[in-house]
Amino acid sequence: MISIVTRIHVHLLFCLLAIIGGTTWAFQKTGLEDSLPLWSASMRFLLASLLIAFFLCITKKIVVSKEVVMISGLNGLMYFAIPFGSVYWASVYLPSGLVSVLAASISVFALFINRLFKGTPATKGQKIGVAFCLIGMSIVFGNQLLIKGDLIQLVAMGIILVAMLGSAFVTVYVQSRIKSLPIMTFTSFSMLSGGVFLLVISLIIEDGNRGFSGISLISLLYLAIVGSVVGFSLNMYLLKKWHISKATAHLFISPIIALYVGFVFLNETLHNQVYVGTLCVLVGVILINLKKKVEKQTKEHLSETSKKTCEINSMSKKEDMNVVN
View 1 (cartoon, rainbow, N blue to C red):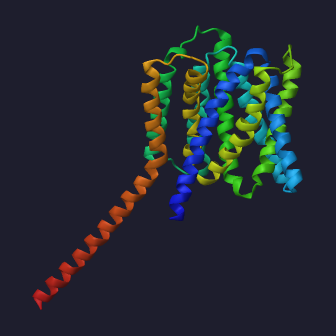
View 2 (cartoon, rainbow, N blue to C red; view 1 turned 180 degrees about the vertical axis):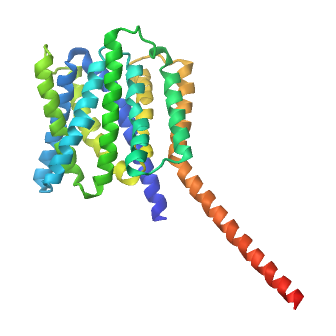
């Protein structure tokens, strides 16, 4: 009974993370209209880091060690600074749909890296599920996947893919060490190091208004509190509980949820291809999350069948011996 409740609890948290991810895409899109990309990303993570640190200091639960500082520094650079910075910057030159598809490649990279370094293979169902998700996203954002082929667009695409490869690597590494890490302290330090790095780069290469007001301020607060503090904490929890393919599957759903958020709140139009693609993504996520259980049940069924077969064969041999005697 407890295990069933735990499974339902984790799946609900997964759904919540996907919804948060979808809304952050929408807030990120609107917030960048009158704000500098890298500056916005740095302020988002610095604010989130300070909020967590403030809570930890009040509750006296902050834990500082050499391991935490080293791993959070690496995570801040490869999970926050470079990937988010590249996505924020590339969004200026590429359609948001293409950016979301490229960003989802982290789940694919994580599968290969996880297999290569940890030796933990994904199930056949998880691999098929990832393929379904990629196909679904391509259908949903099909009209945004074509670009003019300008050099700056090709460079932006390459930067995102390289950033996601690095992010996948550090995600797999963190998952292997996650049981020994104080999650909240690690989260705060990671965002702090990532935010500082983005801040320095922004001050060097960006020029313009660095203030926040109106929609950009609302977006900053939402992205920092909900998108970063709550979202990343949920992501770390799922990494503790699940295989890497399951824990990162929300990246396929979030951009699609952003479209529906835009439809409801921003009066954006949805085409039929969005519904078809959404169905493909949902099928893929179901396969990623449920196939392992089905395979386990199948193995147990085969094992029971094998035992029964052995028992029948054993009884048959005894009967044959009795007949001979």
